[in-house]
Image 1 (cartoon, helix red, strand yellow):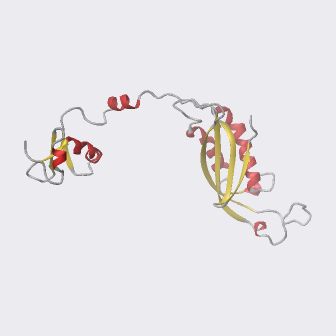
Image 2 (cartoon, one colour):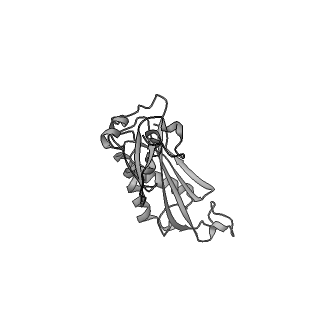
Length: 214
């Protein structure tokens, strides 16, 4: 058996069988140990090293081998007293302004910056929870929340919220409105339960609307 190169190490040369590899454009072969090959097999498999490795035995990463390692997908029961949650984030751009009418007891003081027409990139987070997981281990598949995103794009995105909501378009009212819409149009079609909705006008401030516990 030929001696292994110095960069592999003599201690590795004495362990296991050897694998022959050939660099691209090179005339000769170099020998590396099986252990060294296993250590860098991810590089060889993805072609990052530039070498073609030829080894005896079954190839790594076969579907049947992976299936035997992973095993069948099974649900993990949620212990009593625990609940799992998922969060899906959406965004839309819209404008709004709050009232400064002196006859309105709830209006802001004249000159308040929020009384001027302005806009935000709203961030909306939907929180869905469940006491039991379904399918391969889901609270709810994220794709099932797509109708909520469609509603935001079609009815709130690039609009003036004063023309959409029947109340003052504060973040709190937007959160309540979206929670009600979700409960009426999405809730029945998913296994999880809506826990709450968070609406952010800016990265450092938000309003939340939480559903009552069942």
